[in-house]
Image 1: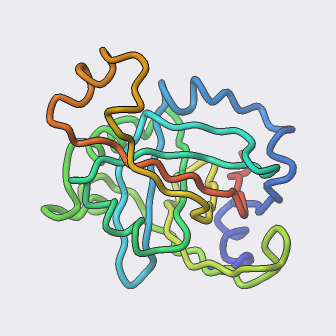
Image 2 (image 1 turned 45 degrees about the horizontal axis):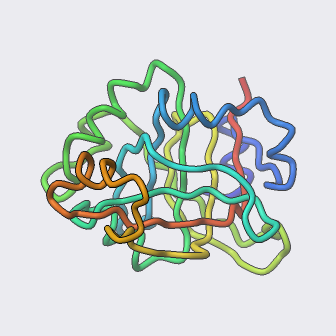
Length: 192
């Protein structure tokens, strides 16, 4: 979808520089409302629900960090792509997000099963600082979409836990999350 097509379905593109003016509580949006992390484009994509992540500033830029376990299908897509999206939804989509977090895209069509409508954002217009264009996937039902460029990737390691009970409680299978720090390159807000 182009900028005009996105505007036609109610999205406004905003610069990530102004994200600090939004009413965005990361503790509520990430931990309670959940979000979808999606990678890929119209030729192939996958999404998964997450409730762990970080929004903030790193290296002087607005960033979003998501964490993905090695067995998740979405990891294959995020590893091969330069960009990924973080999509936030209203309460009415909680059932769809629950489904996306408990079923693998290897085994089902999550969009078909949940009624989520994929939107393929193809943006070659000036993006943030004019350096990059992107071709990413999100969903028409989203209220806020962050387009993130991968800036840093690192697997969590057991020797780095200073609170050992977190390692024992959350990683009994030793399937440590991989952290993906994404620089927010564009944001799309659904007009209400």
